[in-house]
Length: 101
Ligand SMILES: [Zn+2]
Ligand SMILES: [Zn+2]
Image (cartoon, rainbow, N blue to C red; front, top):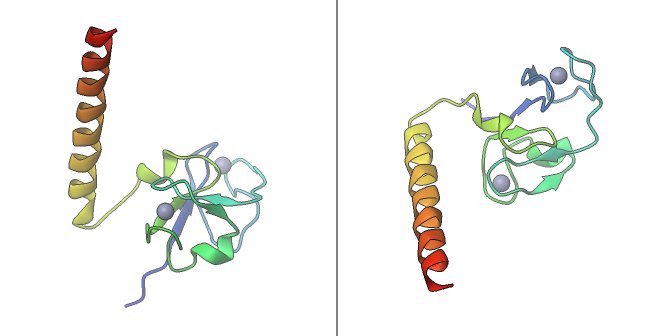
């Protein structure tokens, strides 16, 4: 079974077929695809097998965040935990910085 990237509209969050340049839901025009994970931006052709930069398979259109709304597979939980851990680290760093200054 092959794995192909899925794309989501940043305006309405609807899944958009890879070959479409306009969202079937809201009609928004897409000029490029942006990976919600690493921020890599490029043409949809580059994302056929996922993000060429980090390998993320569900890219968002122009907007980071929406690509994360719909995801499946076992890596979803790992990603969620990593995201929570990362935000916790940032929070702790912020508290430390605020105490120093
Ligand atoms: Zn849309
Ligand atoms: Zn990426």
